[in-house]
Length: 130
Image (cartoon, rainbow, N blue to C red; front, side, top):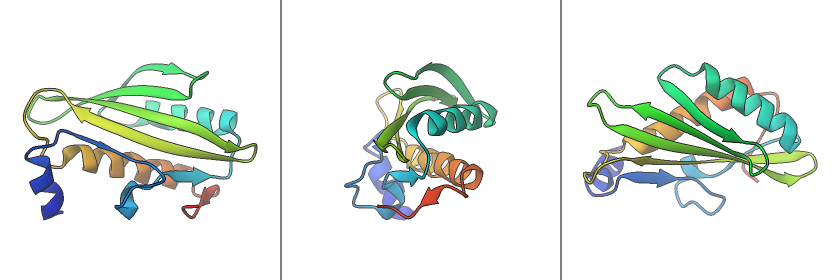
């Protein structure tokens, strides 16, 4: 966590992907079709405290959220739902803080928070990182 805070002194964004070096930032894969995963992810994100859903574009699989930090900064978060094949979908998250200062690791923590909530809600469908 200290490393994340140090990186966060200069960097104000974080993202996940299937090639991420940090295991916590690997794409999460669920045994759900893209449409079903989309419904579950959108409904779960709408219920998360402290996050405001700005817009959702199902055709491209993107959900845009906003979160205000306790210091009053705004974070822009994009959650992508990607159909891996007809029976599996991956969820990736990109979070960036507005402003020029680093985020002290808050974007990293936001990604872990969203994944934790999604994994709990979709635990029956969670696949180990493929």
